[in-house]
Amino acid sequence: MTAISPFRRLLVATGLSSFGDGVRWIAMPLMATQLTDDPRLIAGVLIADRLPWLLFLLPGGALADRFDRLRMRVVLDGFRAVLGTAFVVLAATGHAGLSMIYAVTVLMASADAIVDSSSMALVPALVEPDELEHAAGHLQGTEIVTRDLLGPALGGVLFTFGLVVPLAVDAVSFAVSAAVAARDRAAEAQRVAMDAIGVSSQDEAERLERRVRVLSDRLEETEDRLDAALEQIRELRKELKGQKSEKTGSKDQA
Image 1 (cartoon, rainbow, N blue to C red):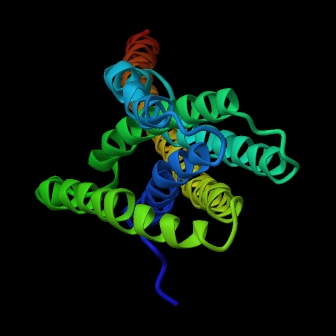
Image 2 (tube, rainbow, N blue to C red):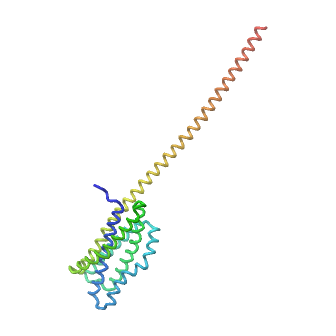
Image 3 (cartoon, rainbow, N blue to C red):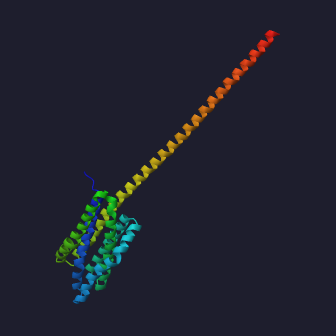
């Protein structure tokens, strides 16, 4: 079985979370129509969904540069899944008022802006440099199709089956996205660990090589000293032989 590349998993996670954003974008105003007839309050839900993008898109990029991007994505998608599930329970029990719709919309959209920034920042680390432009375009296209086309269209259809149905789909999409991103993070952590092991092994090999060189140099020095000592011994032997020869000659003369 062919393994899914990290970039493909990022595409899947992005598509799922963007789809959930699109469902929420249409479901929240429709839900607001069940609580008020004031068009300004209903339009305010749409504004609450878009305003965080102006406030958090650039700071989200800074956060993506400062913190672990995959971990941040897993945490935020998990947060949106939990928040969406809690909101489904409140809506199903009739405890979700208009102020709750505004609060959940702002929180969801804020997380969306940060996740979107971190997703784009992840691309250079997941593809080759010559594939970067194509990958970035593919990721942006996935976001547009799922968030701006498929999500709102299906969200409107799901709303006809029940008030909480699109909200439940929204929560599930974030839960699955968090799971996919978590798997991607696990794979990244394994890769980093393997790289660390490789670096450690390389460092150990370099240390052993240095020790071998030091021992080799010392062995050569020892051999040189032995050669010098042997030469001195030869010289001493010659001197001793010369002295013995002189003594023998003196005795013969005597």
